[in-house]
Image (cartoon, rainbow, N blue to C red; front, side, top):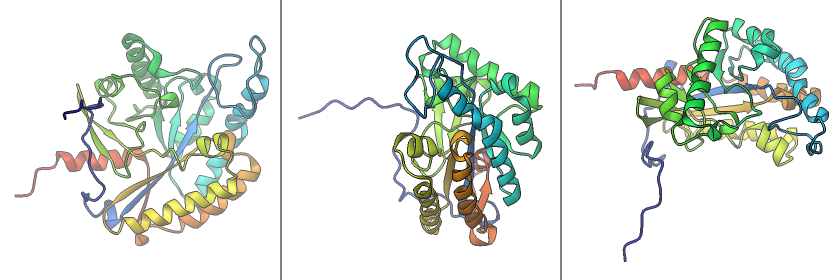
Length: 303
């Protein structure tokens, strides 16, 4: 008896991990590792937002949760920046353009050390997937243009606020000139996505080794989160003997920038930063990964 096919996104086909990718990243490395460091700003008293406590009753400004999140921009992010600098680790800084109104000097400080700035919508108080096509196109173009104007370079990557997509999001991103997207967590390797404006690369972005779902939602301790980071790294490094892989570590400064968590983050990153090119590890950014696979896809096939 025939059965109906389930609805499919149509962006890329199924591919098992046993269908191996090339063996190496640049420098004969096998595991590409990046820090996905989220800098976000939220509206006061309205819209969505991560909370340390239940939201305030309707009609009452949510001072508690707003102030807790803003600690990340005022304190936590600066301490994380110093940590990354001390370990010589690059960061992929995933940024709301609302930061340019609220605390532009923070975004400028990461850009000044050469970190990649990745577009993250205007604010995480809103969901991108609920916009109509005109409004979503306007959001994508405005974020790209504003970051380019302020920082002197247009972003090549995008992570939607709340990883909220419409059916047309990949098409609109490719149309606007973006090269890659971080929304999909379906593989440990980059994936070429079909769009109406050409190829858009999906670069793996973690939902497990990610402090919001882990610490804020599932109430995992920072010690356990650091164990997760270490175990993910060591297992993927072992798996990368078969083929090159990607590992992201998703961080938010109002969580990991809290002093008691920062101390433990420093310990695990100091340990993992000891693995470098000689050990097969490429500390990098999502944009550099995207450029590498783009270049390979554009290269002539060997005769």
